[in-house]
Length: 524
Image 1: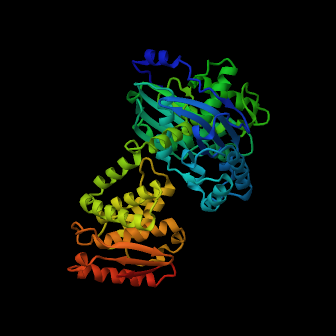
Image 2: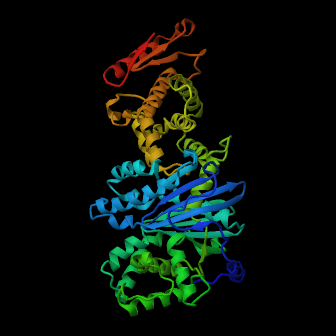
Image 3: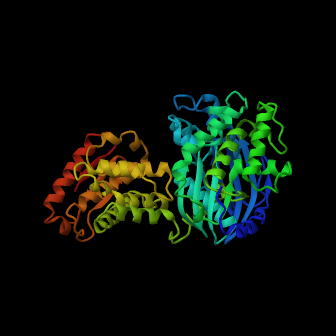
């Protein structure tokens, strides 16, 4: 264990208790505040599902109600990576109850996110479709680094500090680690080890032995070893633990009088020794241990002990900030009128730089795509409009791989990149738009059943054609009109003269749509 010169200062800061969020904790609570004043976040975790309703006024955050249900969705992944029907039913029943609490809250103030289990599940789309139906709202699957970023956002806002910090969140099937200072995360990583997965693997029959604990710690250490340099002790002054596992162990230690709630290597050894002495999950008697934590406490203890000993953490302090609050803060920033604080804009700009995008051409395509899209959707959703512009901004990033079939490379890169602010779902949608920018349409037939995506694809494809010369479009350009399945692209004579190549490409585009049953495009 490493002792740092600043440990006295760190211990002083550690003595401060986490801030109280106010509000109520329980099941089936109906908020007293009018719905339009509330924000809602749903955290679909591997062990627990959580719903948080809150008011957000400037920098003031007030919890109105908080509901937590132990669903253990992660325990329902079978050997083939498929969610069992039983596990899905547990999750759907919980989400239906959550949906009842959302009545009256504006949809734009509600966000549901899913983490590691649904990142892994091969049949996640089937579950998501059913989940969205019972919840009444879309569910976004977020990547591990995005989860880590929003965890830090929750911690940084509710427990502010200018000290460099290490924040750890041990979930059911993943562990997130974040280095940050103030409100800025400097490094965020996610590792595929969590309390549910480790407990199932090494304590699946509910038996506790010294050998099983040693084996579980080795497995956790192997997963986390690559982070030893990235999160080395000299880079941070205090260590905080977020969410369920840390909170549960902290409560055990406080109830047993081992510590005042802070987690130390010695206190964890005491917990592990109590588990081994009990010999089984059923016989384990730990003060403060709740029944919903009993099946996963052993795995959580192994991960915690590995983290503290390998990363030189003298003590880990529980914090109230977590993913669910970070989701609300992130959502509020997205809805700022200027959009300047939406991290997705910065992510798109960074990707353009990384992949050497011709920014002038991307902006030309974005401007034409937006103009044409507004013809199809006179009152477009702000989010759909942003998606279209982001897709236009990134439609050529595949050029860095190869000019040949660059749209396919662009689609793959967009769908699989880590981009702060974006969910996996939204990146896949942007990837579909990039894939559809040119070429045949059969490759996108299932996605084009979505009318909104269909309109975005039409606008982007036509914009790419109009900008094919990589020079500014002269005049106002063609106008687009829709009548049912019939699209008409009408060009002013002043523009059309001298555009023989563009007219040729538009004729080919009309033929491409004619080979589908989706739309008919005529060029007048």
